[in-house]
Length: 266
Image (cartoon, rainbow, N blue to C red):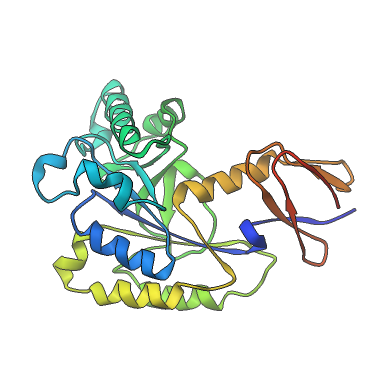
């Protein structure tokens, strides 16, 4: 029987994604760094705080974050573990509705404001159209998330960023899938005067043939698509019911693209 491994798009076994909160004006500089190096990120915005003067403007969301992902961070950034669940639901849904009007696509990601979450909130999110949510802290790991509603990043950008980046680049065993996930707030680069850190990281990480550069939701969709593939009992063929192509490795590492809506003999 064929041995099948899930792959990232293009048959790659490593993925890089970044995640930044609050939609501060420093996002403009950060997005420019990402774009120059082919890096993709997710930006979590509070739709009720745009009038503070230190935030990006609603009318620039669709252009500034083009090619990246816009995701929820609630409307007003409350510590939601202390809030009634109906209030949490309104904070998330209202944020989604506003951001979707700006982006023109379903907004399905979230990062918990102040890192605040409870088990009840976690259970609530799928019914609100949220597919994943990021917690705070650093795992120092390149493992895939076991629970997408308590998704912990590999590191904050002020925590061993270049060291972990070098470790990630050195990974070569293709029997595993690896994910490096970096998070933070763009204003922190001004606070610590260390924009050179992100410049160096993105220059080091960009343009690598074995890395898939993705947003948070693109990563999650890839994993979901693989889970929906329909294999023959003996793995001799596979049907892809998804709207996107999927990639698998067969036996000794032969990379196979399974086109959307097609059956492929293996």
